[in-house]
Image (cartoon, rainbow, N blue to C red; front, top):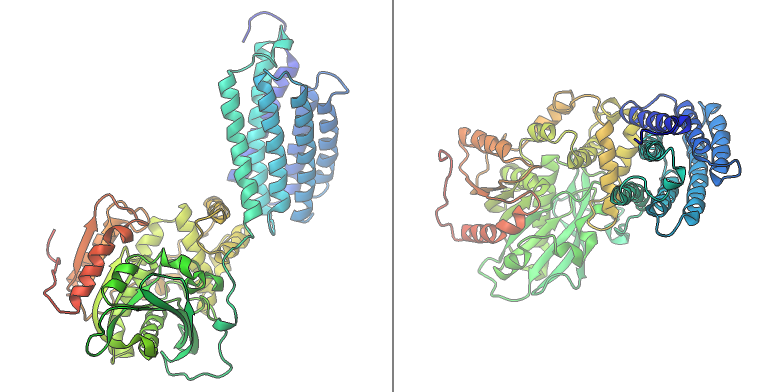
Length: 581
């Protein structure tokens, strides 16, 4: 600070107000208040004070903003019991007023001034946060509190910087707009706040957008249908899908996790060329990984777009395999999807193999293998355990599980509080709440974030712009999600144990593949699972691929897996890695 000149009480007051605003924002973020109205009123009062302190004359646009914010503060202070959406409209209006004032102020600054960009960025930040709170679907007190806290931290920081600038040039106030802090610091800080606001507003706009097509009449269950599992009910060709094969969307009979007859959908991909071996073509049951738990998240709904996600598909087709890929019950077909419920996934998969055999153009044999990644790896292992009791007529030649969700309790605990852990946790909590009569999600989920959890459960894993909304919601759960560890809390813990693979042997060659850099399905936990299977007498081959993460292990290992499974058709000796380092 410059040593000459009298102290500037207005500048010091600006710094104090900015610190208070940022402090309130941080406190709201860490400890959300029971009533948001009084906190919002206090925050708007301080924000109004900052405008009065920053105004250089009574008729300044800042004074207008200050008056608007005083009125909004008074309304908020008297609205402790108001509905959240009313407070959102109040805050949105106040932010729009602040944004307009910032735009007017930025237009009055010299074009060469770095503060002109900072003021314009501040205006857009206000307007984007206004859009966030006004457009966020079904905004809750929790979501509004998060938006308020982030805005307060960013706005308070800007007020502090403005006050410090005035203190540095208190004897030459005309230099505040021309000099101030380093232009680079101004630009970087303004861009950072603008980026945060833009991400929040984008999430608000995109959070209800869903480009996944809704299931149509094809997926509707017939009024009456045979209860015989694996009976083919409907088929239609999807073109284009993959070169060298004809792809059918199918609807077939199966049952849900309670054993009640149900319909399931999926894909059957039949090679166009190649000699059909005696007895028919072998079937590869391709068990999908996590896409979501909502009905619209069915892989078969994605048409040709899903072919890109089916690792090794062209190689399997070239090797002469028919590929049967179930959606699982509740994805596409009617009913609730029992996410990570092993027996249901296994039965839906085995019935997809039966449906492929029933598809006359396929010329399929009863010999089959199963392969899947992540959730699909979990389903593949349960499918490997199931044939002796559920589908004894089928001849299982091999099981390949890539980064399987094996030790469920350990993986859930390891990912607790992470962004992807929250996303998958939301899927599991809602799906199990729907599937099991003895589970109630409201007993394990913080009530403040329950709307976010339910919204996540209605969303599919996306790679486009919708991912912003999905990851924003999952990130919000960092602030609060589970009120108790479900891996230790009954009846959750018992259901988790029941749906952890390995309780029954797999009477076929087993390959487990793992990436060493997988932070979701951690290799140390996978190694412990493999050791447990070995101790139980299961013969298996375990392969790790170095420098590969969760989402890359399937594309890295696909050639190895396709060759390994194809070799199982001619029964060459397998490598048993149990007992090796």
